[in-house]
Every structure is written in C-alpha cells, then in structure tokens.
Length: 356
Ligand SMILES: Cc1cc2nc3c(=O)[nH]c(=O)nc-3n(C[C@H](O)[C@H](O)[C@H](O)COP(=O)(O)O)c2cc1C
Image 1 (tube, rainbow, N blue to C red):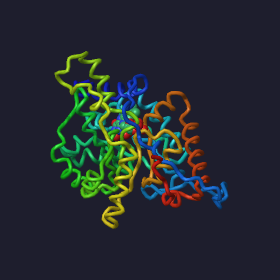
Image 2 (tube, rainbow, N blue to C red):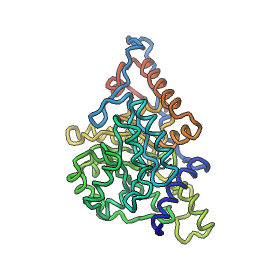
Image 3 (cartoon, helix red, strand yellow):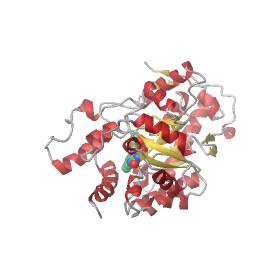
Image 4 (spheres, rainbow, N blue to C red):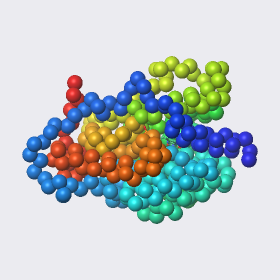
C-alpha cells in the first residue's frame, strides 16, 4: 500500500469513528429551523389517508423528499455500512449518496465497498461523489467514467468543503480554477451534477455562481449538524497533539463557522423568486436535519428535498436506520395533515413564519 493510499483509507475510517464517538456537533449555532413555525390549520379539509409524500428526484418518483447523504466507502468495513445503507434506501425507495470516491481513483482495492450499493439497490437514484479540489485539478475522462461506472450513478455530487480541508491535517486547500473546471465537467458529463457543502452552507451568491457553472442541484449542507472543522480538529489533535503549526487555532468562531441551514434556504429561495426563469436549480436541504418536522419546514422554506448523514450514521450504529427514517416520514405526514397540505407541492406553498 503506498502512502497516499494509506492516508485516504485511514481518513475515511476515522471520519466514521470520530462522528460516532466525539462531540463534533456545532455548539454555538443551530440549523435555525427552531425559529420557524407553521400556522395550525384547524380545518384542513383533507383526508389523512390521502396524503401523498412522494416526489420526483432526478426524473424518478421516490417515496418522500429525503435522501441519505454521502458518507463512506474506500476501506474494508465501509462495505458493510454501505450494504445496509443501500438495502434500506432501496426498501424505502429513497436516494443514497456514497462517500468521496477519491480512494477508488487512487487504486482498485476496496472498490467493492462502493459497488455494493448498486448491487443492493438496483432501482433507486444513486449519487457518486468527488471533492472540489479533485475537480479543480481536472478529472480525466477515464476518472470520470470510472467514478460513474462503479455504482452506475444517476448523478455526481461534487462536495465543496474549504473549511474541512483547512482543518484537515492532510487537507488540500487549492480551489483555484474550480468553477471553470466545474463548468467543463457539467458540459461533458451527461448526467446531473449536484454541488454540495458538508456543513458550512451555500450562500445565495455562491449558489448563483454554481448555477452559472451548470449544476442541476444544490445541496446547501448548512451549519447546525456536524461541524467538519471539529471532526478534523479531533483528528489533528490525535496526530499533532497541541502543535498548531499546520492548523488554524481552535477558536469557537472557526470551529462553528458556517451559514445555518435555514438561512441558506431562505436566502436561495428569495434569489430564486427574484431571478425567476434564470435559476431553475433544485435545492436539497441538509446539515442538521434531525426529524420529520425539520423536513416539513425545509420544504416550506424552499427546499425540494432533504438529506441527512450524521443522524443516519447514529441510527445505523444503533440498528435503527429503517425505524428512524419511517418515523421521520410519519412525522412529515403528521405536519402535512395539520397544515392541510395533501401533497409536497401544497406543502411547498404553505406559509411558515419566524416565531420572533
Ligand atoms: C462519516 C461521514 C462521512 C462523510 N463523508 C462525506 C464524503 O465523503 N463526501 C461528502 O460529500 N460528504 C460527506 N459527509 C458529509 C455529509 O454528507 C453531510 O453533508 C454533513 O455531515 C452535514 O450533514 P449532517 O448534519 O446531516 O451530518 C460525511 C458525513 C459523515 C457523517
């Protein structure tokens, strides 16, 4: 095993362990969903049994507007995690993203830890994943073909993670030329490209630049869930103890850096309204989504879909993945009944207001 290969394999494994065992949530910031409230509808005029949660994502009808966000792959134990994530997503008919596939480009060991998802999930939308620094360097046609073939991907997620790379002991902080390379990628690829943060959020201005580069979907992955600065800080301390020569300081403002998920959604929804016709990109709300009520609020604030990673990992670890997702689905249905929304299109038009 060469050195770079070792680092990538160890990193993916330590991300899962750190997320499960260390306090890596934002602590001075929330998603902002708690600041919003629906108005109760005492006369909903719908039959609870007729509520339809289904929606269309990447031209496929899925059970409800929710996906399991990108997490893992690229080391031996990841095969087991991805197998369970994929079989559950297939059973519930919801999309699934795999973790960064950089390792699979570096060598063919552990490719099965990615390809298992298509074996377990033949029908749902599956999303490949690669980082902005790899896109900025330029992916070859061969790399691209390989990434998509391994899981027979329906879309490619490009994750934007400057804060994570900044705190990562072995991080790659060269994002130069990213947007022009992204434009080339979206023109060449032939399937939708999704631009996604990992917990620091996407502002309306950045969303507009990403749309201009041709992305079809934006996943805001805002602040309020896992802080990837904190995850990398934990890894940094394990490697370098308190020697800060290679990392920013652990100031709370930096560890909690990012735009709360609800603020991202509100800002992008306002921009979409203003720029009507120019800005058709679909929006995924993720970053700290923690129940079905958050999903309902995100949809009413302008999202088309929601995603979760950290909570899904915790649920998987406790053997409660399917149960958790079904509970979120039921709670979304409950909110829809109480606001009188029979389907997701009606929920999108439902009024939601700030509580203060
Ligand atoms: C263990 C783990 C590994 C992750 N690896 C990736 C990755 O490889 N690529 C990516 O785009 N996001 C990755 N993420 C980030 C999530 O997809 C998500 O954007 C982020 O954690 C915020 O959402 P959350 O608060 O629901 O966890 C990972 C998340 C977890 C928990």
